[in-house]
Amino acid sequence: MPKLKTKKGIKKRFRMTKTGKFKHGKAGKGHLLSSKSQKRKRKLKMPGVVDKSRNSMLRTMLPYGG
Image (tube, rainbow, N blue to C red; front, side, top):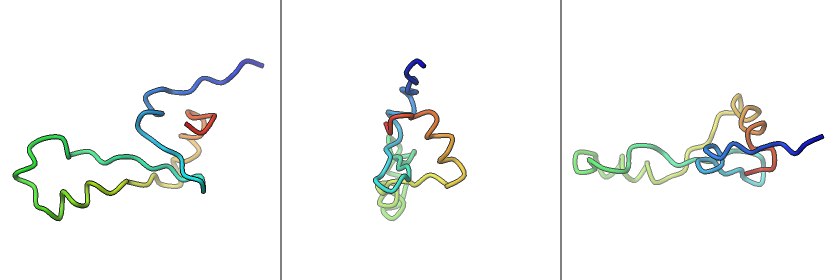
């Protein structure tokens, strides 16, 4: 049976934690930051966590953990 291919776009955007959850960076912190509040910019720094319902989809796209 051939090796499974990793989806490179998903690999660049998501990281799998030790417990099997997926973390990702949040959108909206690239430019036009002067109009956003300090609180909003601070929250954008924190990593986002993927819902449990999408974990199985990401695992198929990242067969070796990313």
